Length: 254
Ligand SMILES: NC(=O)c1ccc[n+]([C@@H]2O[C@H](COP(=O)([O-])OP(=O)(O)OC[C@H]3O[C@@H](n4cnc5c(N)ncnc54)[C@H](O)[C@@H]3O)[C@@H](O)[C@H]2O)c1
Image (tube, rainbow, N blue to C red; front, top):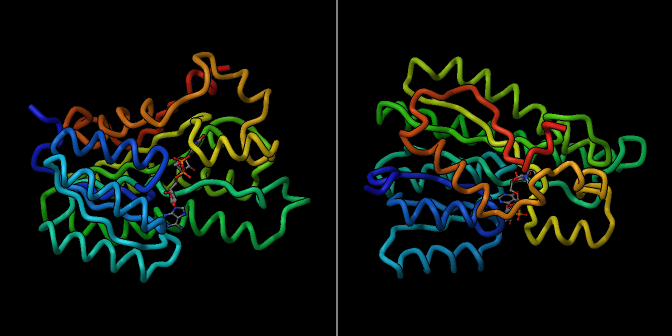
């Protein structure tokens, strides 16, 4: 039995990294997939591969920090597939401009909040009415180890991810009676291409040596986060809501 058979799932930031690994896994578990990103070439290629291997996926471009774009993408996908059961708010990340608050350009704060907090906030707003029509659903937000322990070097991003933790709990409370569960994954250092590039530059917005040493099980791969997203998307987690699950090789335990 495929664990997402009959479910319509939207993943933001699906063209690369954790989102891409999750899209592949969700497709193999029977989900009908709406893929949202700003990297059109890789998003279209991923949708094409999923469709060619017998799955169903459609890529729609939207910058999640622009409400009108995200709303149009979500409405387009909901209309095409007949609703939404799962929203995985995965798009996010820190840029090399993010830094200690005394050093970073102040406008980087707005960018970090727009991508990492407003995007998921708006995504929930646009998807929840569709979930209600289907009698329930599952929202998966993306926090970070930076929201679970004290870190420095990406202070705009860190503030945004802290907001995700409290937003997740607040929405869980408000959505439980609608049959909608809201949880968040808090990844540790996952070696996506973006993170590898930050580390190669020695940029403070990527994990430093001290942070890497905290990962009791070593650095992560996108394919180690995707099964946790699958758990939250599937009915296996039907009695779980309002939780922030660190998926970090033990880094937040030290
Ligand atoms: N990789 C890590 O170490 C790590 C650690 C903690 C948290 N996270 C979080 O996990 C999530 C995925 O991270 P990743 O490392 O896989 O990222 P990634 O950079 O590998 O992939 C992110 C995807 O999001 C897309 N994207 C970027 N900005 C966008 C926008 N404005 N609108 C729509 N799409 C956009 C990118 O094009 C890309 O395809 C992010 O929310 C990130 O903050 C990652």
